[in-house]
Image (tube, rainbow over all chains, first blue to last red; front, side):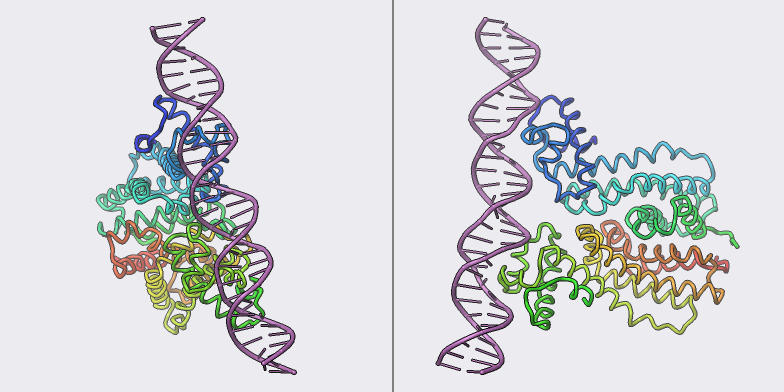
Length: 212
Length: 212
DNA sequence: TTTGTGAATGAGCGTTCGTTCAGAATAGAA
DNA sequence: TTCTATTCTGAACGAACGCTCATTCACAAA
């Protein structure tokens, strides 16, 4: 929300008010965007949703795409704020990874609508905004990278450090896949079992010890 | 193209002509959709692209969404027709899987624009059309399932048969991820190395033998 | 009480788009 | 050639959209 607020110009001078109104805009827009998609949602609908007039909403944003950016940014920071507090680990890397996977995958489950939306609509942002969202995604991936490096150092993981980045992306994607393949996965698995199996897969991939 | 052609009604009676014209429509639409997205492409553009008038195009489709369906169907069958001829395997399951991964991932690389498009715009289809596209995706996944089952039977893979479906989806997604995460992956890896590492990961996951 | 400020309003502008339809062009049969 | 069936054409339609701007209004300062 930080960078976002700065970037988008507003006609209104009272900064606190801008923040309040933008939160209202995002709150109304998220639901509509997720339900109907960005293109099929009208700015009028968003405004009407919380009793603001079409004119007023344009005092706080420049274009409809600004709303998309605010929403994408909001979704991403919601996810990462939900994840962060759980990521102060003292255990060995193996347990740390196990927990991180569990947390991240659970959050994907909770926020699957949002994550699906990010996958489908980020492309509608302009280059700069898209880059910013990608950067945020990379930051999340780095959390997994760190744990993996720790595991290599303490000998519990046996992958080359060249492969760490890819491995971290794999973990992220295997989590997000629960959202964007839900049409089939959620017919066959429940989230707990899904996390179990995927965790087992990932750890086996990393494991230096033989497991039967 | 088969099922698709049947479903969508046309004003024109000559069936061969319908097929010819629809191929033209798809050919023009694919490029534009991939480049600009579905919503930002106009029906006029598509028609103009190959010198058809706006009126004529509506003799061969009912709505703009019909074009989207034709395009999604075209993309999916292109992928699966590129994959199929390579999938007559006599080797052991391990080698079969290695080859299948190599082929599928290479095709994802070649057709990354299309695959990205599918991810982002399938949602704009109506329920029935979307289901049809999902079904096609499941069929592709079953190719990997079959190889995995074969590997379990001949003892080269050590996963429970309950996990086969998920494993197959993992492989598909790890392939497609090359397309939808290209903004970062293709900065750090080339396709050959990407395939190498992922193949290694996947095989290790499945392996019953210890690998150092 | 008067004046100044800035947020809120919504009718409406300009434009675009998907879609239709009356008629022109064309091909094939008689 | 004439007649008919079929395909092609693009002007026209009208709904919908993002966005603007002249105006109102509540409140605070003077």
